[in-house]
Image (tube, rainbow over all chains, first blue to last red; front, side):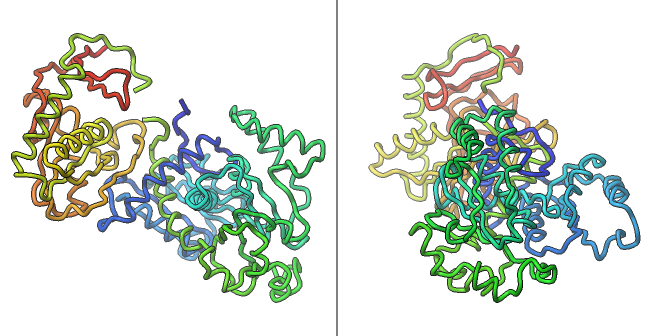
Length: 345
Length: 187
């Protein structure tokens, strides 16, 4: 029997076992039905308070969490940085303690610095859910991506997933690499040399350590990790590709990351149009992937830069499905954070 | 269920053939009461109400030549003890693919005890629409004295007067090794 889910905080995918990831995805799948009802509301979290504490702007993620909380009958309160007392000089811990004094059950936090949710978890009595911290993790995005892959490819194990773009600054990439390698997919990353860390072995090391700790039964991935040490790169669950064509070639899933326009000023790449020419996903490049390959993008997308409009609007693009599944995933995460369990009945 | 301590069986109320006959009778009573299968919608309550509902549907199909509508509800998110039980219970899917508007719903569960499960099921049904009528069929009714809400069954397999210290277990081949109903003493 798999261990039931007993975690309260969701700080990152890195901390989760494959069984826990599966449990969250199964729960989310069962929540999907609620979103198809005429009355999209169940009383499960009645009387609970969910605070969306966003130090960074995000309409989509915040709205998704807010809708998820409301469909479970929780009271959702949104706090955004411009309206908060942080601008008046309050420290993070003081903000957390003040919120805590109002007895919320769950705090969903987004911050531009890595590790903020972890710090809040130490001082707050509420369950903390990471909605994106700096370049570290964005666990609910990886979970909704996984749900989309599972829905359209039946399973995650064995899928070849290309992640294209600004890997260096992307919390979406980090959470996805953790999740996909834990679940037995093969990940290939590619992008401009300045935005793809060549030395990504630390991810593999972490993945291996976790697998051993948690007794993950994927002997397959363990042995592939060993062979990585002997430089058998083709067996590795994570490969860094020099050209994006190599990453996309034969892929089941092509995940495009958003190019953060503000990075342009930091000289990571010359111009947006040059980025589009060399790294943008066009139909031509997508043709290198498997015939039934699916395209994912965490949004908001820059049409004509990292993804061509004809790809974004094609039937292979599941970008709006991702948004749809995002609500179900966040319902599951909030339900579990406020006391839910997963596992056998 | 896996973590429950071993219970001592005090007596066996039904074996497989008795259960089959009881379900056949329930099926007949349901179609007699509703004059056939028109607008009839049998809805099993997870978990053990589902296989019982499926068997009633099959029996009705044999009797009437056509099966009634069938659905499943999971009441987890409608429980009134979510804030008091330690961990929220596991959520399973509700499957009411046909609109319940104007239908005659027969909820099916294994045991009627306090009535709280049925309350949760009724609340959930109302979130799906406005059925013409809702009835309740149970395999075992533990008796009115246990009821904590004004809820009674319309169709009863067997009424078994029990004490609070006792547990009724309905075992079905879909989930258990045996196909039987027994009374057990709470440890």
